[in-house]
Length: 130
Image 1 (spheres, helix red, strand yellow):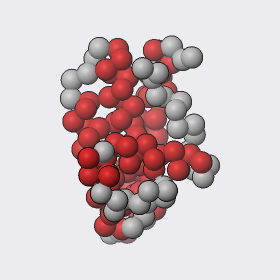
Image 2 (cartoon, rainbow, N blue to C red):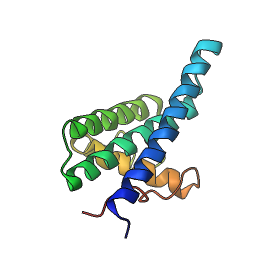
Image 3 (cartoon, one colour):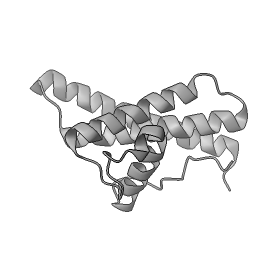
């Protein structure tokens, strides 16, 4: 089992990865006037999963302030993107009504799907055990 400081380090690493994706997307938009939709989706999945992990870790360590709102908004953004672009990869489609009440559950499904497809590292590496 990972220690709290190991979780924080993993979270910081993922934050760096998400920031690099954001910078790459910004660069594409500036230079090409458009972005790669697949890269945008990967950013949205990783950003939403990061916010969800941060919320869980901050709750577990007593540092929760606005992390729940951030995680909920990031999850809703991913869900809206996948509904509009029909890009979900999980077994339950984004259009399913169940996700209206549980957008963070949708993030869990989509992040796990990316990990199964070997597109990301272990989905639970930075998730605290609560």
